[in-house]
Length: 438
Length: 92
Image (tube, rainbow over all chains, first blue to last red; front, side, top):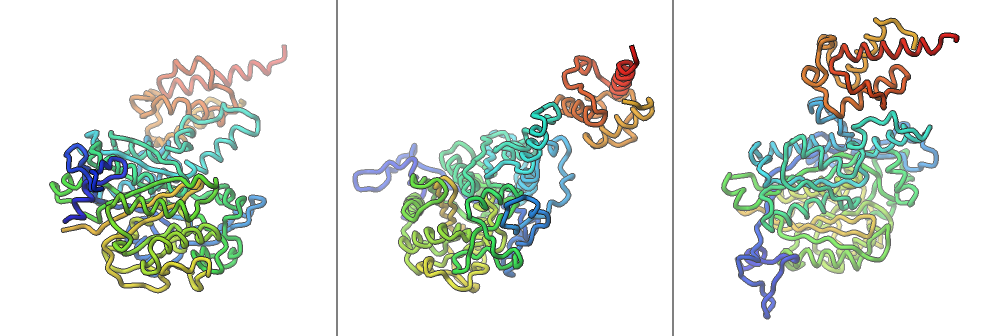
């Protein structure tokens, strides 16, 4: 009970402590509790949450060789984890015309999540529901098409009116909010690979501060050779496995050689605890802590010191200690430096007892969608009491050897887990989730 | 633009089918673009782009576009453009 009360009262953004370090029990500093009441997903493993979970449970990889990508001169990584866009015309043209591929993924995942959470029309249009969705690039294919129209003759007269809405960084957030009629806070987070987790963090803050009762949060991303190309230029992609796509990416493995881009969308419905209880909503878990911070050290990568800071502050926000953590769903994209820094941070703060695994080997790095998609799988692991292993992790790299890596399916009760995401800009995000109380 | 009126009507219809997913059966000349065919202000911009690409003309800044209300108005407008282009080609 003490911990629950602490969790209700402490938030790093609103923490008002008494002289003894305990939070004030004043109503105006009391934060709301936030639960997850719906999930939706489109990934390389299928167009819904069950196919994602089942694919990962079976240890399947969505990574394959990408035909035609070798037409982009200089691109060395020719593998990716594509998702299938099924029946986009189910979305009326009026809404679909401004959606690129990633917004369509987002719309489909969002529709699933709202249906799963049984959110009625009145809730969406009440102004008490927000829509916060992130992405790394915006609509990569649409951006490419727009410049392909403009640049040959430096002429904008054949640019369609809908192209802007397909391109921009808030394309998924605005399109989904329009499609679903959501009239509360509509916002896009854009912090590359931490975008989805930041979106969930924003939704968490909005609800716990009492500004919204519900929030549809998540991220979306679409594959494009130019997107993989950006990572390729930075020598962060996997290039040694073009002939054996299923063997990459290899998070924490000694033979890892970089990330593999994926695509899709993950969406969750966040809901204020009492609001959910009143309508007897399904509860996947409770968010009890969150932190996001910058490293201030390097533009293209995070470091162990700032990851430690992020994890520590997320646990402090949750009112828990490292001993309370049962599982960490790692960011671990299989880059040489990123995996090393994350492993070092995890082992320093949590030792070698807490199981750690990454899902990038199954669905690739879905960039701005990764935080939400991987959170959804982590919730399933918590419900099942099983930790799915890191696919393609065969020999742990000595540089990553500190944590307890999960190489085979591990049956383990999970009461609290942490989801990590790290991004270009040295941006970190960590979310702490707790098993739902009946 | 060297096309018969029938070819122009068919090509305009193609623009409406490709750009706005309107069925052939609904493409009647008296149909109002907004009220009957469901277009809006964004679609009008894209109609101009569609006509430019289909007929290789520049119409985006043509003030006559603002007077278009029905599908028949679009047919007549493109036919007028066709006549103008033929007139431009005549030797002086």
